[in-house]
Amino acid sequence: MPTVVLMDVSLSMTRPVCLDGSEEFQRKNLAVHGLNMLFEHMASNYRLEFTALMAFSSLWELLVPFTRDYNALQEALSRLEDYDKTCVESALNGVNNVVQQEWGSACPCQLVLVTDGSLGIGKGSLRHSLQTLKQRGEDKKFPLPFPFPTKLFIMCVANAEELQATDAMDNLEELLRLSGGDGQIFTVDGPLCMKSVQGMFGRLIDFAYSPFHAVLHCGNLSSDVQVFPRPEPVVVDDEVEPMPQTVNVDEVGAGATDELEEEPSASQMAGKSPNFCVLLHGSLKVEGMVALVQLGPEWFGMLYAQADSKKKSNLMMSLFEPGPEPLPWLGKISHLGPISEAAENPYGEDDSKSPFPVTPQAKRSYAQNVTVWIKASGLQTDVQKILRNARKLPDKTQTFYKELNRLRKAALAFGFWELLKGVAELLERECTLLPDSAHPDAAFQLTHAAQQLKLASTATSQLELKHGRLSGTASEVFHVLFEELKGTRHFFVKMR
Image (cartoon, rainbow, N blue to C red):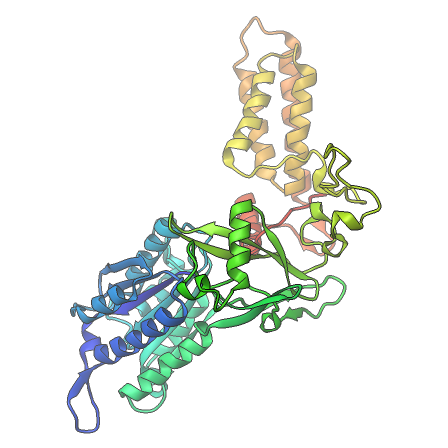
């Protein structure tokens, strides 16, 4: 999980802080001290993770692109310059651009925003940005929430009393809520000083960057391992029991290893400390295979080798959804076992057959031929197919009604009333464009089809369901469905 450190270098960060009569420090100096502490911790415990450093005031700048070189990050901190006013919105747009260019929109990312809690002044300030959220067009939308999963940690070089004296804390909490709420605001306990800032960054480390140690077992072999990034608890929603069940990964009994180079270390070559992970990693890499791993009761994953570059390779762990059958085609994991224990070879004597995929007992509704429009091009293709057949009436009457009814059925299932009206208008237009030499039955069929589509759209759009009335345009409905489903990793939509 990559990390972006977003450092505030506005003029408010240069405000002096007196430390018990000693030399005067700026808030920026305290923030740099805390970030150096974070980078030193990550260099020791999270050296497999990528980190980028950005600075912002009214504009933003990428100081260090994503790297594992924490010395480069610390050197960039020592060369920070001071600029003008604070503009958080501009900086968040910069984070969005940097992360998507490097990782796309599927990779989770952690954002550490280091600031003094000043919101900025006038247009471009955080206060102004949040007040104008509902008055924006699509081209000027607020960057939060990001299109990629994000954890936002706001590090305020100020104590809670100072932030609560103004509306700064309320605005920062709203910023956290807009990001998805998956993060935390950290403030300094007590007066501003080196020790209190160290304590604040220490709480961040304990919360988000503490190492995760586990033990990997395989028969009589075992090995202590460390997992990057730290796995998180998974909440399993059970349809039978309304109370969710939490799978706590702190009880994990297997995990991925630290970075493994192709050549074993000197001590391993000498045979002083044999490592099961090195053996497993090398075997999986050479054979091109994966190994199943059990993390807890009815929770499984897989281990496999993945090359970072030509010289380095890692032992990776991917987790399945908790449950006895995380992969439907594989069946129950507990039913897997050695071929030697089977009554007969499931692959046949000459490997001519395979027991996979396992055939489900119940037929899935989504296995049927259902019309689905994921992209606009798919819908456009279906409409064009209807129009092509419409121009060849009455010769293509059967095909015309087949395609038209398929589209009509899908539109009614999705509540896409506008589509029915739109296709009806297209058919009426085609009727007016018919040449004089056209068969009389063509105009009759087009008029009849347009009338039936209009009738279906007006009658169905007034339908009241048992639990309420369908409302909103089709685009709004699809937007709501997408927002609800985009957080899931894999899903099927069943339409009736």
